[in-house]
Structure formats: C-alpha cells, structure tokens
Length: 354
Image (cartoon, rainbow, N blue to C red; front, side):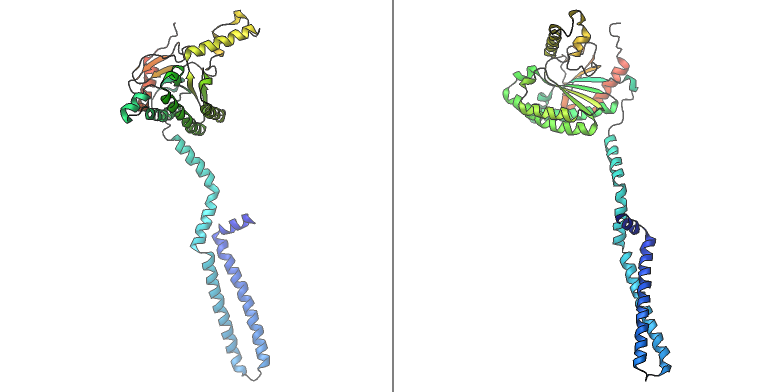
C-alpha cells in the first residue's frame, strides 16, 4: 500500500486523472439526484405549465454543471498544490539519499589525499619512523606552557598520518614516550598521561574512519597508568579490523629494553625445549620484537634539530636512512615530508653493505 501511494504521488498524470474521475462520478450522482427530485416535483405539482418544464430542466442541468466544474477546480487545486508536489519530490529524492551520502563521504575522504611528491610509487618508502622531538620547547616559546606544545604535537601526528596515506606510505612508527621520560618532572608526566587519555579517543575515531590499524609498543607497560591503558586497549581493539594503514605508537618504550625482552623470550623457549640453541639467529630474535608484524623502517625522521637516536628502534633501524629536520614537531608541514620522500627516492642509494 505504501508503495502504491508513493507511486501515485510521484505521477503527475495520476494526480490529474483521479480528481477528474471523482468529479465525474460526483456530477453523475448529483444529476441523477436532481432528476429524481424533478420527477417527484412534477408529480406533486401538476398545475404548472408544460411550456415551462423544458426551462426548469435546462436550468437544473446548468446548475449541476456549474457545481461540478467548481468541484473539479477545487479538487485539482488540492491535489496539484505545489507544496504537495515539493513534498512528493522530497520523498522521491530520499530514495537516492544513501547513494549521495556515500559519494559525499568518498569525496571528503579524498580531499587532501592526492599524491604530491611526484615520486614513482615504487620508490616511496614503505615504512617511516619518527622521533617527534621539540614539543616542550615549542610550547614554551609559543604559549609559555610546555603542555600546550604536546597538545599541538598530537594534532600534527593526525595530519602527518594523512600525508603518509596520501603518498602511499604503508607504515608509520612514532616515538611518543620513552622509558627515560618517566624521569621527568612528575607534574609534566601527569599532564602527558592526561593528554594520552584524551588523544586515544580522538585518534581512535580518526583511525576507524580512515582504516588505520594501531599498535601500541611498550617495553615497560606496567608503568602506564590504568586509565591510559584502558584507552589504549580500546583504541587497539576497535582498529584491529583496519587494513589501509598501520600506525605503531611507542609508549613507555626503550630500544634496549625491547632487545633485552626479546632475548629473554628466546632464552625461555630454549629452556622449555621449544627451540634449540643452534636455531637461535636473527630471524628468531626478530620474531620476538614488538615490530614483528611489520618490516623495518626505510626512513627515520627526527625533528627539532637534534641528531641522535635516543634509544629508538635500535634493532630495526640498522639500514634505515636518517633525516634530521630543524623544525620542532608541531611546526612540521606536508612539504617537509614531501622533501624527505623525494630525497629518499632520488638522492639516497641503499646498498645494504653490498
């Protein structure tokens, strides 16, 4: 029934014919009624002149025609009311609403997602690692508050991940908080943990929308506050199905600690008889690394002008190319990443010792 009503309202021909049919039926009924009334009146009043009977009949039918035309016009105005037509058009257009929404979402997602480096996709680095340095100094210089620098840095990370996706980079690993950072002023550490809590929610939403799978790499996970761990678990769990891009966030992480933990795991496997001593090699140790799910970084970027590794991915960066940028992390622009990609593709030759 609902489909029939929608089909009727969407057809101008049906809208015109129905009131016409109703008018004809009503006019016919009124004519018959008048005819019967005339017969009854003629039987009861025999004294009227027969010469006037045709005049009464003509006037009666004229009156019926007049009322029928008026009724027809009223019905046409009602059924062809522009407001009803607009409503009908609106209802009909809703059929395609989902398709338009999907197209709009696709267009919005494509905004800012075009490749701009001009580099052959085969020459684009697959895995980029970043030491996000300079947040504190940036915050103090711009706001007089180091914590606000960390907030701006978290926004830059979201933008940086978009730039990587647009250029065809598949994996991004960022150094968010080292095991040595626990030795900072307790007030600053508390502020950083609060930022991580909030940031987990924001990043989770963005990651789900863009198909980013997130891994959190921690060598001293027990030191992370419970509320932060809950946010991390939710973020990791809700992005587990994503496959467009991989983001590794190193939190409470140390490269030396990662190697120590991997050695302990291998030693335990040997002790339990799962692995013979002569089977221990780089591949077995690589399996125990926190980055076992991805390849080693092609590029390591460090911002803010410092030129050291700071205990970051010591095992994985054996053959990575290094780029040290002067800008603090929150000031990084897309053009900075594009320059790194171009230099890597054109100016760096990786020979792996050959």
